[in-house]
Length: 490
Image (cartoon, rainbow, N blue to C red; front, side):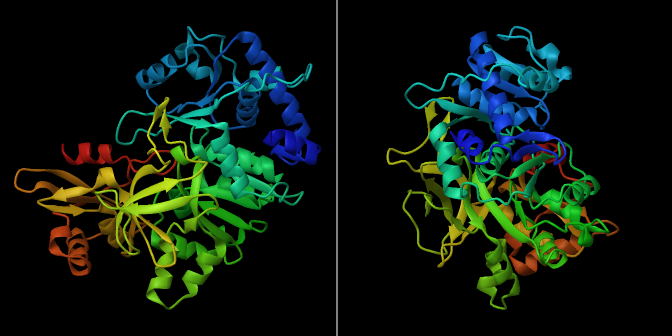
């Protein structure tokens, strides 16, 4: 439906690819329906996408929708054993895969096509409509979580979840004819799916950068006259280190970020370097069809300019809920707490799936436990305080790593930091930290410990702070804490 609206409203506007050669809305719709006919003819029950991002991705996403089968993007960075395990869940799939993954795909319903072969196959021929979902609440996509703390789980997103998010977030046809968005998140992340849907609905051309580098990102922003972009915090930190970044974004109006915590120093630097850019902090989960709260451009500038401590603190918040979304903070008894009190973040709304491979995880009245910790201030701004699963229990005290990480990330010379709990015979867990120095900086672990002790208290001071060259992260910026703990425990 979203693609039909775009093709009807602005059929000749390029929506995917470069300004010189890309797919128009009409061409994207025709390719998607040709792909749907191929999928239906094969008898496939799903579409698996195991490749880097690019034009084949949106064609496959909409083809799966037109064919009435779920779209399943898989993480091509997983090991062979994990990928084989996930592929076993979709043995009847139509598969689009890079050549390097072809050996893994024996036994699937149809021989895999490379992204180029898929685009060639859908580029010409009859354009009869595919078979639309007939009834019920069919799955539009199954997206596997990153598995940073456990095995990946398949999140089931239904058509009404995704459409509810798009309609609440974007006005149809609101983009200017020459607007362009740059996407550099991998296709197996919810942000990739939501970026395709929202930009197509808005009528904005989508350009993909499949492998991020600061210089290449800045070059594309210049050459393609990018007006909107999305990055993860580690990407923005690297962009701020580029010597010519200040003069490299002439057309950029909006830069969204999310996926992980943003170091305060990085966003403050970005607001100084790019004063004409509107920054958007988008907080959400796979289970919520992407964004559920937003800190918009005006919120950023207002907080950045404020001399009031409470108002300025909102620069590091996740903003307020988007239309159609309710957020509550609850205590251990699942009772909502008052403003300013920390607890578990619960969310409700039409875009919230909360389903894993058909297993319902919402309460009877539709509330979903995000497993994030946070608080709401008196004006309804949401502050995320980390994952509940990451909480360190030292003696009888629950300690949020994010609180300690925030102190570390504010110190001069600290580019990155993580705090974890390690097994301890006396306390149950002890606090340890890893820091990464900024380019050309040297760090004094004891001085950092002293600063944490001064700002927080002795029970929250890491017993050990070690210096590494980098932290292990996913492609979307999430720290792999289990790898950090494993390395520290050696």
